Amino acid sequence: MRKTEKAEIVEGIQERIGRSKFNILADFTGLKVEDITRLRRQVQDAEGEVKVVKNTLLSRAAGQDSPIAQLSSHFVGPNAVTFGYGDPVNLAKVLVKFAQDKPQFKLKAGVLSGQILTAAEVEALSKLPDREVLLAQFLGVLQGVPRSLVTVLAAVIRNLLNVLVALKDKKAESEPAAAAAPAEAAAETPSPAAAE
Image 1 (cartoon, rainbow, N blue to C red):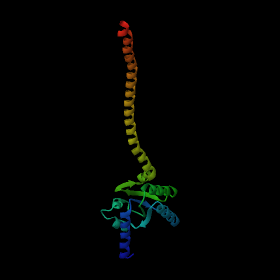
Image 2: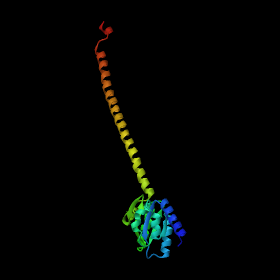
Image 3: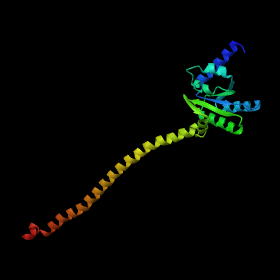
Image 4: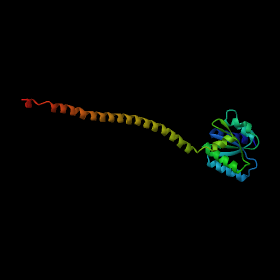
């Protein structure tokens, strides 16, 4: 391979690393070409890309400031690098399912938002609900707070109205008695015409 070809490959990997949100290294020893092709299609459907890269070129592309540089200790043996451009959970699900179907495909490690993930953590990531489900759950939590606030405020107003109604009823009960007392007093006192 010529220097220019190597430089182009390194540049292409760096560009993919820059675009990706999620990177996973896997050992693909023992997989057939058809299996790798099927994996590539599945990963592509999950908004990702799988590349088989020589470790020396991968080390050059990783450099010092690259997120994938943290995985340099795993640049041993044959490596397939997965670049995830979409939802990391969907991509993790595809890779974990493929690894379960084809035991020769072994997840080594990954990087998500600058954090190194072990193979077990990638598997745990694959068990999370989809992004849409998480957003719906989050929205439900956000809606719950204002709903609770409205319920509490409505209860305060309702209690105030109940107190006012009770006061009105009590006042209405005492008013007929108070109105009846002057009428009885007026009936008992003789009128001036009757006194003559």
